[in-house]
Image 1 (cartoon, rainbow, N blue to C red):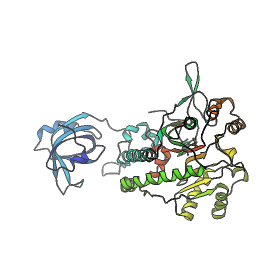
Image 2 (image 1 turned 30 degrees about the vertical axis):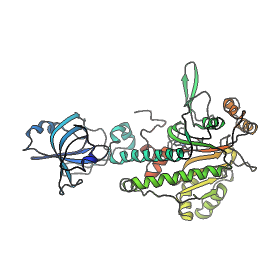
Image 3 (image 1 turned 45 degrees about the vertical axis):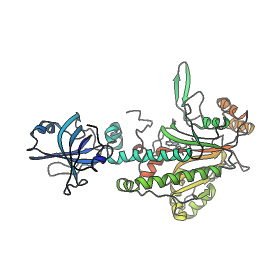
Image 4 (image 1 turned 60 degrees about the horizontal axis):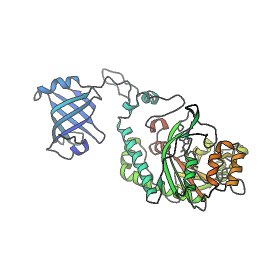
Length: 444
Ligand code: AMO
């Protein structure tokens, strides 16, 4: 018999099915035993009348929580059953894999008459056994939502003529700034793990590919211990040619994100609110935008937040967080574009205006930066000078060559997929990733 997903089995009372999955819950009574069986689509109760099925007793006697079983049986409608009003009456139960007692508590286990309450294991303990932790309804929903998100971003761009590229992650010279790169042994010399596909996105522009995007791993050798930093994350990066200004890049991003959130809300809005307690809010267009110095003035006037004049060319973490309050109060919005960063604080490849400001932006969502974007400097001589000013001469020579033989004006952005997931579901980055990587975490 072919396997039926539980969600489909629930729709066909009266039929015999084979369902397979994990034992989500198991109660073994004197006359009756109840298994809640879970697969990636749904859960269903398997009800065993022990007197009617003596042949199943031995198997039931071995069952433990989280064991994997195959159940063949009849789907029956019964309105008294809490879970969907459906149960499965088995004719056979096969144990595929027995689970040992679980080493973590995925949730707090409330006290009973006989046993004291058990606390939920910490996130670090849960990551030690991430595969067990990922079996929860919340975590499985997370991956369904993330799949929809990334798929929607991809679809949106494909419909607008973008090509998907795959750039190398092993590179010969440190990318971006030269700092925060992982060095790896590469035969008899050193290589580096890509900090960003930045240089290759731009090479694609010099190649005439016109509009490209990439979803891939990004490595940062940063010793940060915050709830939003990781040493390896998934970047959603894009780049496109013949823009007039970085504002064209902002338009592209706000439309992309709005379309994505619309689709997420449509399909998973209810479940996200139920499991994560946070509504999915579809933003209005255009997203509010503010110049960095104006933002600092507003934060000071409204909330008494002050920073040294010398810090005002970049965004502090506190300003990022406070900007959420500001954008909600003033615009009733969750997103804020911030422009007017000092070129000195930004990467050398950003195009600059006459006042020495980078012609780019950060996008802040719910008080956390999710994107950096910009128009790039595509004029070889100026770009070379900007690289030298940052002390990056020889290292980036290969990259500078991309601009010597014709290159269209262009711009793009990099969006952190893990941060986006984390903010959508109100989690920390450790909770939002398949497996977190940090300074103290290389396993599992
Ligand atoms: P940036 O360094 O700002 O820009 O990175 C782009 C986006 O990636 C995410 N991000 C991170 N997520 C988790 N942990 C980290 N340590 C981390 N660092 C960054 C954030 C961030 O906004 N080349 C430019 C992009 C461009 O201009 O196109 C770049 O890499 O969401």
